[in-house]
Image (cartoon, rainbow over all chains, first blue to last red; front, side, top):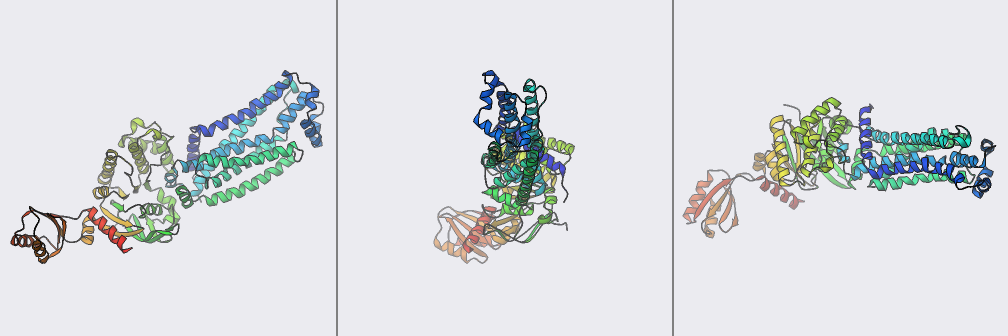
Length: 279
Length: 316
């Protein structure tokens, strides 16, 4: 089957134009990254010295002690010789924050996909779209593209900015560039794209059952629980996101995303969409 | 003979356990405006969706522009234009952005789309507001923009689904004018779905009357008159209510098919032909009935429509 790429880009461009004009959609995409990229790192790096926290205060924190005690040896080695503040910064911002970054591809893709799929139905514009010459698959791919590309672009952009902030703010502390750590590469470039696709496909399926953008977004947002699971796993020492573990988790995410995408493509048919729109 | 633009042959479509269309037969010739008339739920919108491959029939055959909507829906939709019952515009986008988006999805080049949009925005008197968001438009303006969208890619076949639904009389008259212009100046083939009989009588070359998924009758207004309400109709007015004997006398005239008393001084008469009317006058004069007017008139579309609908409802 021939795919008209100009149809796909037209749909993606239109959807992004609409997202840009929906404050409920783009505001969370601005605020949440700013908290993770600027507020938390700067607070972690600058507040402890400012309030006169001593080395003992920092390293005798029971949670941090438990985290350090359960760390795999390779992680521990990377922390050897660090001053208490640098150690705390590296643990918190280098290891602890890593799974939190996976929220971005999920959040961005589900917001845009909910706006794109459920929003189209909510605003009663779907039928006109179905009367265009684009095939079912082209409509689906155009909307997936609209969700995936900005989700990945924003996630990677956030990672880049996080890298800049951490290195700039922690330059004196570490005596040079210290971020990103190797464990971040599979998270950002392997798991994140998989999660963006998973978030998009899940939202397509959820949108079929939910009549509004907000309803679809809120239901899809429960995917963030996956990330919370990684975070808790790492905090309790059950699961450390090393490079190897990251690659394996990524593979699992891609498999689930592929299955969900297959189901979503199968369900994305004009006749079904019309029935959904009527309900 | 030219190939029909659209044909339905014995088409049945089931939806949610009931038949939205039943053994439906229809054909549209090039350049004609065909009206699909019927109450809500008659199957008008279903017909448009089937013709464009949005849904598949349960049985029967459809050909739109000679193509099969089940297998060639994309090709069909590239050559048809559809005005949906609601304008379905992207209200956060401007008129120009709306047209640019739909033009691209109809396979138009950017330059062709830009030129054609400009032309249609001018034609529909929207140029001044072309860069305003569609959400700020009045209902009439939205409908005109939706019509512009339907015409953007120069469709060979245009479907208009309730084009004046929800519009005020001024906006509806404006849309009527536009459709009449399309018919008269561009030889556009149009399938007009409506339950507005005035609209249908004014704009359509042929009329197809439907109810509950069935086609009740199809033809020009004259053909429908001959089929549904044959003969000559005349209205008779009296200075004073005539005696009962006058009514018997008229009914006894050879060629008089029926006489209805509309009120005490007005009758409606159906005759086989015009030549019967002088004999009716003679009979009334013999009975000393004071006839003040006799006006031959034709059955209106409204008469035909309600006769068909009530016959169908009674038969159901």
